Length: 509
Image (tube, rainbow, N blue to C red):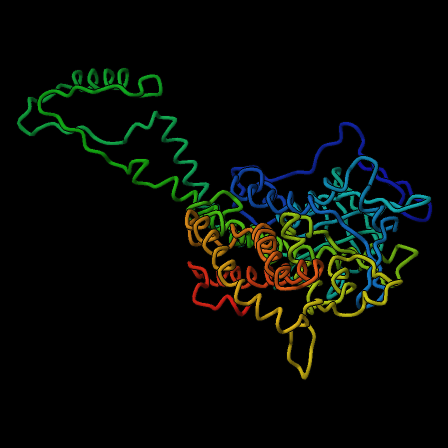
């Protein structure tokens, strides 16, 4: 049995060697009643449930939990040495952050409840998972105590301050969540029945059930002949050892099937449908759990974004808020502190895509530099006043609300007549390259950085020959290239299959 050592507070929990594990429902009665034990048995015996729950648990556990201090609306300070960050990074001497969060999400997926026991050390707090099937919450609208039933049936009362309780929604119980498996019980029971029948079917060497018919005019058999025929048939064609045998019937006999074949029963289609229903219940995109019927390169990329935004996003928000509510209160430093799972590492894409997006947001009049840094939870730059001003490209100014070029009019007029063929030539190269790509993939395969580089290099001599200084020519070329290719990429994102050849390239001059 567990041993609790207490000196005014809960100190530690150990299992005595040889102590029996918690009782669970046998697989045969897994669908008979509603209890935490049966949810665990369903997880062990139903591969579709385990696939989806493990997928959620592994992907959440793969994210690091960062702790920040909100200095201002546009300033964040990363607190890598904060107590909360250290406690979650090493929850107890026998478990890593990954395993602890994986167990937490697995419990939420199976039971929609998870419990951590707080162990108060001399210098820090530790956390140990308590199996949900051993826990019961007491109270009415709010929990007043937790009851932990030990393997020897001893019941231990735990104060609410000694337990971290993660729970979901139950329409009939405000204190504990209703397992998603309960809603899937009937579907899973049908799948289990089909699996049992399929196993029996193949154990009999896929032998089709049926009857042997003899013509009415055939000679009547004596009891001895019937018994002899039955014994010969079973010896030659029944059982796994005789799979694939060919029967030879006499006296005009015919064999009539009396059951559906494996193909007619559609075992594989039914199992696939069950996995789809389980994935939908947990709001997991179907391609993420191996259902690739309608998957393409582009929509799998979009499903990956959907995974961390619409699927895992609500889970992460719930976990972050519960950690702040139940664990952060144990920390000495709580002022403007918040926790956040780092999903940027999963959504940022390639380095080139990140650089292009930040250049577009920060390098043009949309965000200040510090506003852009706050989006990444980076501290603001305090010793540079320009970091709090919107950047204005050197080739643009404002007058009466209109945006005007700052280079001489003569330079613009000369350049405009020369840039059009260069821009159209760039469009032609892009069109030829992406003609080899499926239309739905063109936007994702459009290499903005490459085309910005090439077009800027082609345009720079034009502005130099028009009288611009080398620095101004380089900046104008870069600005025009970014604008042209941003327009092109926007058209592709909106479903256009061709480049905007109908537009006057001189407008970009």
